[in-house]
Length: 182
Image (cartoon, rainbow, N blue to C red):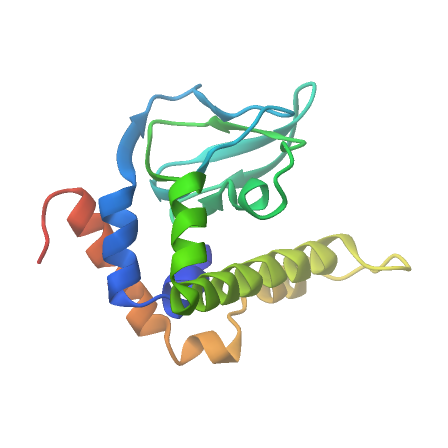
């Protein structure tokens, strides 16, 4: 759920409602390919519940995703097909928001655009920092498993100030999608 916190911390309540109204809540059975490498992606997905595998062709698992992760954001930003596939590792529930709808709102609403791009920037910066900490940068680094775990799971201090708001927004997002607006 940590990844969703980066996005939801930056967005406002009206943005959350727009995502729910514009997107569709979908159930995917285990084994379903959500994103296929080198194929066009036309939705941004928020994982509401479930586990997904990231597969580098031909069949090498290089990562996994879970509740709160965002999928399809790179294709929204750079308009290139992905180099990996994303497959449901188990039954999953996702919110799918069309790229076309997001792009339209970004063009019409500059305040939303500023919040949305800031949220994606923070999210992608965290992903990059996590990869660099895990894989090293430049010269090879060896660190113990505990240090690696702590670095990967540490929240940015600026996010800590709004983590309760983001967590509440995630609960409300799930409630709205499941028909419980309270």
